[in-house]
Each structure stands twice: as C-alpha cells, then as structure tokens.
Image 1: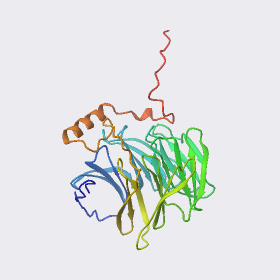
Image 2 (image 1 turned 60 degrees about the vertical axis):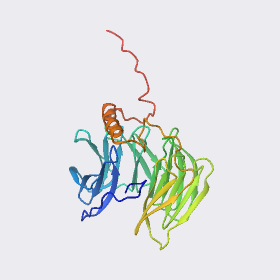
Image 3 (image 1 turned 90 degrees about the vertical axis):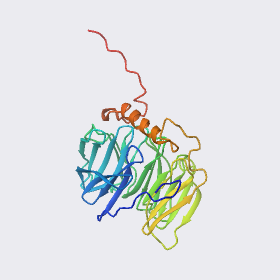
Image 4 (image 1 turned 180 degrees about the horizontal axis):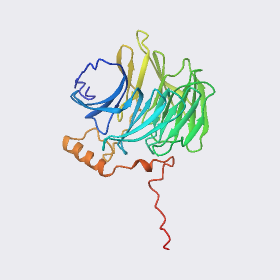
Length: 306
C-alpha cells in the first residue's frame, strides 16, 4: 500500500507460508521469508531474486548502511547476505536454538537475538561468538526491541514481565508486569513503547525512567496480534493481526523534524536514485560493525615509522 494515498500497489499470492517481511535499501524492493527460501520482490510484485543461501528463515532484518540482509534460521544460524554484491558474508552458528525474536541497533549495526533460555545475544558478521551475552530473564523470552538512539533495550518474557536495560552499562533500569505475555514490542522515534498483549495494544511513555501507560487499544473480535510497528515521521502505529491490518493514531509518536540526509518521505524519483547511489558510495563494510557506537567517528592514530 501507498501509506499516504492508501492505494494498493500490488497483491500477490505466493502460495506459501510467509514468516517475515522487510524492506531493503528503499521502498522499491522488499525481502520475503517464505517457508523454504527468501525471495526479493519489487514494488509491482514481480519476483526479482531467489536467495538460495537462506532457507527456513524465521526472522529478517536489513542493515541499510551496510547493505546487509540478516536472517535468523530455524536451526539457530545467523546469516549475513550482501544485497549490493549478491554474496554471502557470513553464516554463524549460535548453538542456542531457534530465536524467538530479532532486532537491530540502528546506531552501530549490531543484531540482537532473544532466546528461550532468557538470554539476549548481540552479533557482528565477523565474530563467531556473540559480542555481548546478557541473562535478562529467568524464564523464556517472548520479544525484544532496541530504541532509535541505541541506548535502551526492552525485553519481555512468558511470565508477563517487561524489563528496560541501558545498553551503555548493561544495567537494569526498570521493570514492570503486564496482563499477558508481550509477543511483540517496538519503540517509536520519540521513545514510546508499544506492547501487544493478545488482542490488545498498550503504549507506555517514559518506559526507561518511570513507565506510565499512555494509550490502550482493544481489537474488536479478539484477533491475536502477530506484529506491530510505528510509521516513521507519522503519529501512526500499524497493527497486523490474524484477520487483517489496523492502524492506530498515537499522538507524539513520530519525529516532527525530517533530516533530508536520511530517508526522506517526500523525495522524488530523481532524489531516490541519487540517494541510492550515494548510499552505495558510503557503504560501510561488515568489518566495521562494532558494539562501540562511536567507533566509526574515531580518528586512527598514526603508525610509528620503523
């Protein structure tokens, strides 16, 4: 759908189970994790590519500054695929089983996985072992998400607890209990935290400091929510459920100030082409993904001459 005009762009029956969907470097292409393989479609619904390296994928994430499609597989492997070159960068065996959730830190490109043993692990494509391993809950995790600043991590478990963590010190900031296990959660650009609790959505503000319930929305018909996400630069929360899609107005959720150097929602076709070329020229190599958010901005010390 075109979000502004609400016009249907394409509708395709892939005749297969779809486990996850993610946009690629712009809005003209998307990756779909189907039952066996991952397929790439364009904005008209035409199949562009079938990625044979990625099979039995349960979660997808795309790193826009690195042009890396990250997939978590049913076997527990974490795979990085370079969409600009069409090559497999790395295939990491986590040895932690099928992950229940995956998200990315948009500030440094680190991917976080949630596991049934209560651990959260953070990964880089050039390391066979996790950069960080946190025991966040004593019970199996149900969901996780990282805010847009890259400073806060929210986790939820099957015992209905939600915890907020500081990723700079890896200390627990706050925790509270909800009515049901949060199967999905996401942060808005302004820091609002949305939780899906069965057929209900709860939104909290100041979650890291003093959690306060901001809004609540109940779906008519008791439809189980399968996904939810905030629309960038808009005060809208999209809710996907077992019977379709709902949109919910959330005042103050979107960032009001648009940075034209980042993805511009008002860009023209020529600006989109220039933006794609610019991103390719400024592409960050996988080796530079680090847990240190400021690693890219540091100036290297000159080597001593021998």
